[in-house]
Image 1: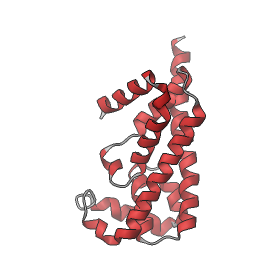
Image 2 (image 1 turned 135 degrees about the vertical axis):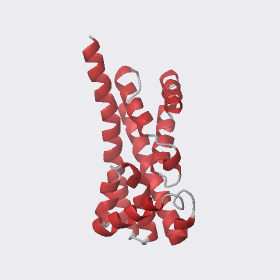
Image 3 (image 1 turned 120 degrees about the vertical axis):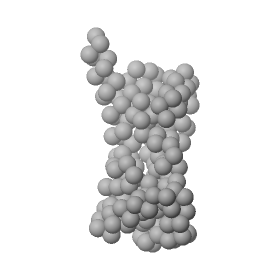
Length: 174
């Protein structure tokens, strides 16, 4: 995974105009129920956040792209859960990792709509909570408000971690 992330970062460094669509795709994949298990993109997102402070890449388009990608990834996961219901439990990767669904279920039962917001900030829950919210037929608009509010905050945090980390390293080397 490290070489995968490094290739993406190198491409973005050399092709800054492609940064927003790449960040969108990474955040979408990071939030999509099945893809996020295969492609943990948060490290690449943090690194791209770091590029913001040392390149011509502007923060705002990257932030909007990451936020929108994350929100749409959760939206699709919610829709899949709503349409497929508990049949998902027998599909890969959840058939091999049933604990992911059970953790998501207990989290959504305990926290409800707030869990959609909170779950965004915890690795494996990030992609499972929206899926479970769909399975439980959580009301659409409360889900979407929590989804997109958390997506914009999450994207800002992830990108700022990279930006501040890069600035700290630059400061230390000077």
